[in-house]
Image 1 (cartoon, rainbow, N blue to C red):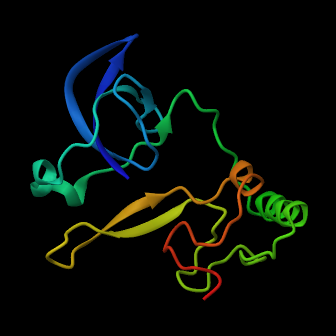
Image 2 (image 1 turned 120 degrees about the vertical axis):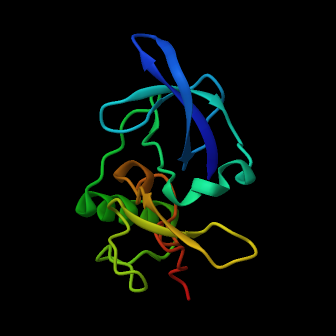
Image 3 (image 1 turned 180 degrees about the vertical axis):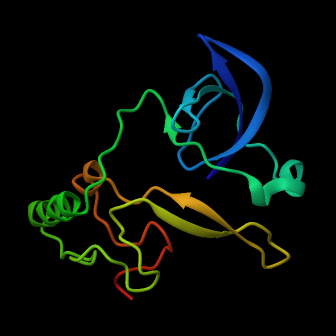
Amino acid sequence: MQIIKVKFLKGDAPAGKAYTYYSLVAVAVGDKVQINASAVGVVVAVDVPEAEVAPYRNRLKAIIGPLNTPPETYDALEATVAQSKYCLEHGVPHAAPKSGWCLRCNQNIYLPGKKACLISDYKVERSVLDSTGISVERAGQEYITKCPHCGWNFWE
């Protein structure tokens, strides 16, 4: 997870001051990103030090993702089928719960949810971030062994 700075786009040009966000996927300076449902911006800084955002890190939001990637599809049933096909094609056992529900955090791994993350090394402080879940496309391309929301290993 990266801490980035983004300027909102007005037309095709970045405008105003840079705002700080979390990015759950790697982005580079100059990438256009979808900030929220209606706003688009351009990344102006990556790998912002945690010390710089310490006073307000509990209020930081995550961007939706880069614009240059096609939108992912979230459908629990289709993703379960895609993961089953992947496991059959690659000869590996189906590790992810077939119902899609993580037994540890009680969230569906194939749908967006919430993720609690440690935000301080010296104090136990937690921040709740949006978690993307596992898309239909991702379920058909990789072997799923951990919950995207809580990180629980399904083999334990």
